[in-house]
Length: 53
Image (cartoon, rainbow, N blue to C red; front, side):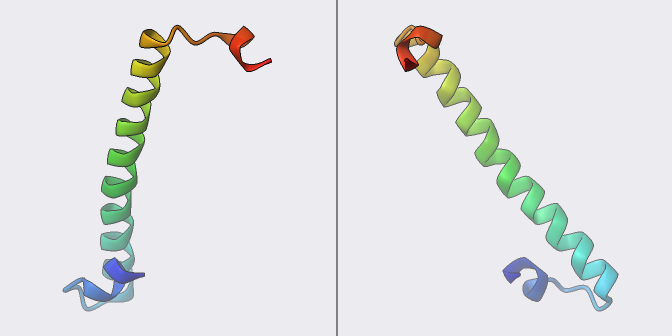
């Protein structure tokens, strides 16, 4: 909602497009960091399915 309000676009379509793009960048970055951390933990701690039961 914040990116929708802060955009300099004048039309609703432009505001929505900008908000979606900003959110994709933000959440995509978070997802990338999360995946890297999961891979790191899985390789360093030697996680496998038997650790969870």
